[in-house]
Length: 587
Image 1: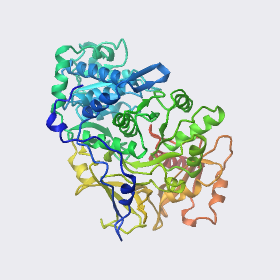
Image 2: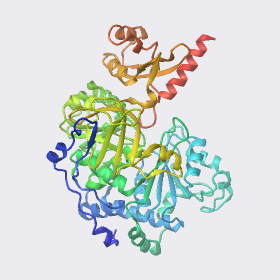
Image 3: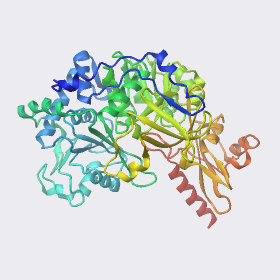
Image 4: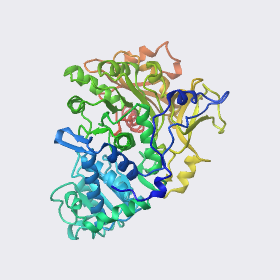
C-alpha cells in the first residue's frame, strides 16, 4: 500500500511512547476546581487509517495480524494488507465512491475486520449496525444515514439477518445484484452477504473480493491520497434507550489517536497479542481492539463470533495472548470457567475492563487467577471515540475498582453543576469532555448535536467526581438519579454497598414511578453460581447500614439481568418489567 499524499505525510510523525513521569505530573486538577487536562505527550498524529496501516505493514509485515483460532485462520500484516486491497478494489467495482455510507451487520468475523480497513482505504463511511437490531431498528439506521450498501452475515444466534433484509427489501427477489430499488430502503443499492450462495439480488462477499481488476487496483492509492484525517469514516449508533438511535460520526483523527493512546497506556508493543471477545460493532472492539493493534503492530485474536468464556480462555491459551478485553460480567464468566477447567493464561499481562463498574473481588481475582497484574479500567463513550479516562498499569487495586483512572492525553475534562458552573474537586456533577476525541456530531441531526456539544464540550450525561489526585469516579447517570420524596438518591452508591454481599455477583438499582413519593427504589440482584439468595436477606443486609430512604422498597432475585450486546445493564428494561410485574400483582 503506497501513500501518495506526501504533503500530508510530511505533517505527521511516528507515534512515540509517553513519558509516564510527565504524563502523570499533568493529571492533577487545577487548584480549587474540578478540571483536568491530559498530558501533551505523546503527540497526536494527523493521519488517516490507511496511513497507519501502511506504516505498520512496512515495519511488521511478516508478524501475525489477525488470528481466528476456531477456523484455523492466521494472517500476517502482509496478508491482511493484500486482502484489504482486494476487498477495497471490489467495492470500487460496485461503483461505491468516497463518502458513501456502507453498513456492516455481523458478529465478530474476519470479514468484519477486512471491511473495516477496506472501507477506510477508499474513504467509505463504515456504519456499524448492532447485531441485536430487529427490523424497525435496521430500517431506521439504514435510512437515517442513507446507506448505499450493506455487508451482512447470514445469521447470528436467533437473528436471521438475510431473512430480515429480504423482508425489508422484497424487491431483491426480482433484481440483479447492485440494481436494488426498494420502497422501504430507497438509498440501498447493494446487498453483500457472507455466504457462497447469497440468493437473488445479492452479491456474495467472496465475489466482491474478486470483483476488482487492475483499473480498481490503480485507483486505490489515488483515492487514499485524497483522504483527510478530519474526514468522517465511521458512524456508530447509540443505544437509543431514550429515543431513536443517534449516529455518532467519528473521523480518522478521532479514532486513530484514541486507539493508539489507549493501548499505549497498557504499554503495548508489536509483541503483544490481544484477545478480543467484545463486539467489533462497538468502539471497544473496533477502535480499542482491531485499530489499537494496528497502531502498534500487535496481533488481534478473535475467539469467536460472540462471547463464550470457554472459547475465550482457549484462545488465550492456544495463542499465548498477553492482553484481554471485556466488561466485568465477561470476566466473571471467565473466572468461573477457569475455575472449572483451568487453562494456561500465564502469558496474560494486561487488558481493559470497561462498560460498567468492577467489583473489587472480581478485579482481585482477574489480577491473581488470570495473571493480569497490569489490567486497566477504561471509561468513555461512543461520542468521545471512546476512551477519555483510563488507569495506569501500576495503579493501586483500590484506584482500579473505585475510579476509572486518570484523564487521557490531549483531553480536557471538568465537572459541572446544574447551572453549568465548574465545581470543586470531590463535588459531584456532570462530566464534560473536550479535545481531539469529541465526535464530529450526530449524522444529519444538528439539533441533537447542539444539545450535546456546547462550546466544544461534550456533555456526557454521566455523574462523577474528580479527586485531588486527578482520579475520576463515575457515580451514576444524570437521568438515572432517583428523586424519592425530595431526596436525591444515586443508584451507584446503593449498588456499591450491595456488591459487598458475599452471595451477589450482579446488582442493579433503579427507580419506578410512585404516587406518594414520586419515585420508589428497586433492586435486582443475581446470586453467585450455586448460592441461594432471598429478598429478605438483601433487605436485612441494608437495614441499619444505609439511610432508610435509600433502602429499596422492592427487591428481586433474578437468574440474569437484561443486558445490551456489549454487556451493559438495561435499566429501562428492568424498570418497565418491574412496573408491569407490580401492576399485575395489584389487579
